[in-house]
Length: 282
Image (cartoon, rainbow, N blue to C red; front, side, top):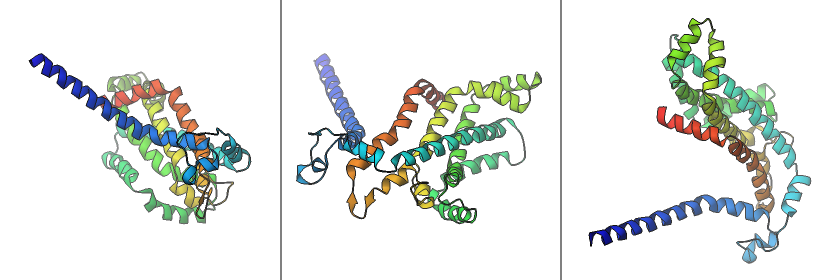
């Protein structure tokens, strides 16, 4: 009898587990499916009473429109170069900053390290208006270089704080041995610490790229013309008053998600390793 009750309980637990997992999958994948399916639908299947769950008439019209009749390629190019430059600069500055906070001793080190996370926690909207006034004086409004500088205000603290936790996992004996052998601090950083932090660098790179790629507030405030807009602000320009071109917007969203998905699949082993190391030792 006890064995039967145990089997019943295990089957009941399994049913509940699968039900919860199915709900989570539906919650997570449902919006993605809707975006992809809508991008391949005709307008009559998107709006009104004829809206369908599956595309009845599969079409590439939305993709052709957004690629060849809209300035989407320019939005994509702007987002790509802003994200690449921002990520590269953030990794370099974050690596130098994290090394200084962990391995160097100078007055106010702890306070400066904590101030990095405080600046990251400040809502971007509080910095948006002072930055707008500053960039306006420097003629950086409607300029991709202005957006690069704006993105660095939140990616550099993020990268520095993340790398600090990883650098703490590197044995200090390796750092001390390199200095004893005559290596400089920069040499120790780039010859010893940096190679050992490969998984961490991959994780921070992906997150930094994603933060910059998806940023919307600064993009919508600091850029107004189509030659300087990014994907996030450019796609919002497809809404004209109360008219929403959902098919084109969904096609643009699918194309906009490709770089981050591609980076994740290329470096997923390093990122999983980095996330696990950070979860255990951070």
